[in-house]
Each structure stands twice: as C-alpha cells, then as structure tokens.
Image (cartoon, rainbow, N blue to C red):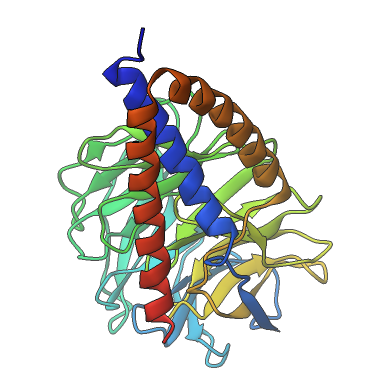
Length: 354
C-alpha cells in the first residue's frame, strides 16, 4: 500500500515549510542593527506618532489636540484643537491632509468618536466624515483610494474600509472581540492588526483573516515597514511593553527597545531607517525615535521558534522515513526538487550580495 496524492502533497508542503524556516535561521538571517534613540517631545501625554509620506514631518496627539513637527522634533505646531478629545492622527497618502479621531459632542445627542480630516495648508478646512457609532484609528491605503479604520457599528471594534470622503463603508472583519488598529501593506493588498494578543492579516477583498503570530504573549500595534518585509509590533514578552520586529511571514523575532517602561504605537519612517513610538520613559508619554540599519536582513528565529522547528523536524523525519519505505522513487524526486530550490535560493541571495 502506498501513500495517496493528498498525503504526498501534505508531506511536500511540510518539508518545504521547514526548509524555508531553516533558510531564515541560517546564512540568510541577520540581526537588525540598532542606532541612536532620541526623544523628540518633552511634554505630557504625547502619543500615536505617524510619518508624512516624504518623511519630513511627524503628526501626533498632544493632550486633546493634533500636532505636527519636523522629523527631528523641531517646529512643533498645533493643527487642530477643540474642547473635545482628538487623537490617533495619520497622513493622507499625498501628505496634504491629516485624518484623526475626535469625540463628537452635540447638545441633546449621545457622545461618540468620529473620524475627521483637516487640510495641512489650511487648518480651517476640516470636516467630519463619519457619524453615529464610534469610529477611530483611520489610516489611508498607499494608493489613496481607501481608509481602513475601527468601527463599533456591529457592536464591537471591527475593521472597516471607506472612501476618503466617508462613503462606501465596508466591514472587513467580524469577531466577538475588539480588533486593534489596522496597518496597510505597502502594496495595499493586506491589512495587519491584533486580536486578543495575537497578530493577524486580512485581505480586504476576500475578507478572510489569517493568523500570523500566535504565542504566549500579548502582541499589539503591528505595522508593516516600507518594503513589506518586516512588521514592527508591541509585545510584553520581555516583561515590559517593548517594540519588537519580525519578518512579515510571522517567522523570526528581534527586540528593538529595552526600557523598563511602556513603549507603544510604533511607526516606520518612509525610508525604513527609523521607528517612531510613544514611551512613558521618564514618567510622561512622549514621542521618541530609534534609528535602524541592516533592515534588509531577515530576522533570526527566537528561542521558542527554534524549539518548534526542532519538533517539526523530528515529526517530519519520522513521516519521511515511513514514506521513503513505501515510495522510494517519489521520495528521491521530492528531495531532489527541494535541493534544487534551496540551491537556487542560496545562489540568488549570494549574487545579490556581490
């Protein structure tokens, strides 16, 4: 009796998965180099930094208002401020507008959080683009055609998308728990977000969520880097709320901040050489940046991932031994094909380094 085609395909997929993980953990892997950490603001309750598309400006929330500053922290300017709360700002894809969340307060009506937009060149040009249920954490797609955001329309915070003017609202996720703020991939074909301490991705077109990282820690605030190869996120695996980076396929992990305080809301610069974040190091939340280099290197496996790989290798070796006994010819074909794939991948990366 020989294994069927379905069993053969499953075994090939398992071997291919382990081979790809091993490639990451060997010669192709490397550590991201960490540079200078710099504090940009020195006030109270400075949060949610976001870069302009050209990397020249950072918008952020300060107390109950929306501010911008130069990327080096200079020329801090208030953009929008009312008696209500405002926060969670982000730039439009052309850098001309800032979208943000604000508490909507009107006489004889219930309070809710809505999304507004303000023009950078004309601060008086502002408008509310959502109504009714709480809607917040707006972020525009790279091509400027859609805004992803969180909405309580369905009862709890789910991810929705809409046109920049607030029209054509479409629900993307639907779970019984609150999703975290979404972040677009550079191609605009994927959203990454957190849910119950795990990191997920979803294609806004097919709306099928996929679990990207599931471990024993609380992981939040995921955001893609500019070339889509990395994801920065916040995790409590160090005992504090620190920023970590993983490969965009969910494999590999590297710690970026090492403070005995809370770090949150990481945001990649457009060049991918810095991460802005909010930290309460020193007592009050302020905006900081950390410089990065060698970000094109794949992130190495963490200790828990190495153990998982060893366990998977052991299980697959047992399956391969049984399969080889029953189907020696198929086994040789599979191993030869995988060997060719591995050699091609090594050669391609070697030639890139020349």
